[in-house]
Length: 301
Image: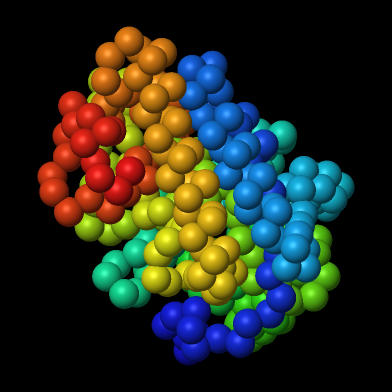
């Protein structure tokens, strides 16, 4: 049985994946104007502390460059990593898999389960993801693939822990495992520290998606400053945690100011949908919010 929390697992060295620029590719022109400067300020703060602490820092583009030659045309590939670009539409398919916070625990949600039906029946598949910590996502997905009558030939990852690899290999002994960064690592995505960036934060079960005329705005749990998860381990030093949190709070204020100035009115939750795909509200509000709720009125934004 996998552990129920990160706290029950041994802690391998930290790896900071700098995927901020890759997130920028999903922004609209307005999103670039509003979010890029704030995100780069947070990025500078986090990288500064990571470098002084001796963490390994990996540019996300190094992972994609390394992974491309492994994505061969003899397999149908399911891409779990939301930032990994689909370059062979006939042989690669996006599979949206989320770790969703439910109270003190997490569950695995697969948004588009029908994507498996489009894969060649009875054929082996390849999986592409960025990281694996507990291995629970890959294991659960592997069971789904097996039940559909298919198998997993290859797994391509940026990094993982030994625990994740062992958990997966206990079920699939014939799968070839490719890993960009050698050795076990607990991996942190830099985009998670940047307010509103596409695919930042974590889904929260109790917070529904907010529908707006321009598209849905999900509410996602901010990572920095929370009591659980890898960021807590990374910023165990209170001084570091306070400094990064200050950078994040300044970035949030900048987002509100720049968006309001661009729209010439007080920015609302609905306006976040104008910034690009998968831009979210980084919050866990205790009071009900609507598309018309102003960002400035949300105290923890």
